[in-house]
Length: 91
Image 1 (cartoon, rainbow, N blue to C red):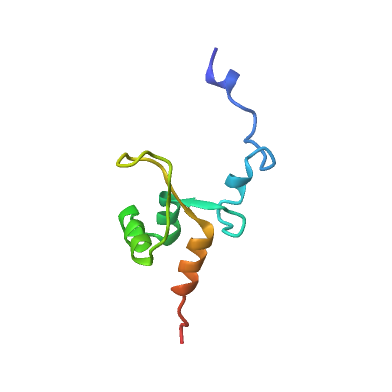
Image 2 (image 1 turned 180 degrees about the horizontal axis):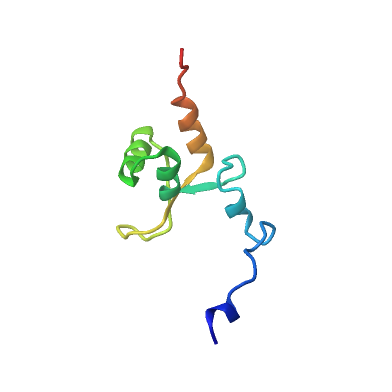
């Protein structure tokens, strides 16, 4: 059996994809952002994201036990509040 026999004929339509993937850029519909997503959104490193969150005193939801590495997520409301505070008028 070759790859041509098992590969899909066309890419999956957007209706098949989960809503979190389709609306990835729309913060109003998101509940949480991962640290990696914030780094991409703010165009900085993950370390800078941690520093900015720490400086703002933002609470982060951590899915690991105390002292262990784990997946951390930030509420979208906190992200939108931080971004609105840092908006500046150009002129």
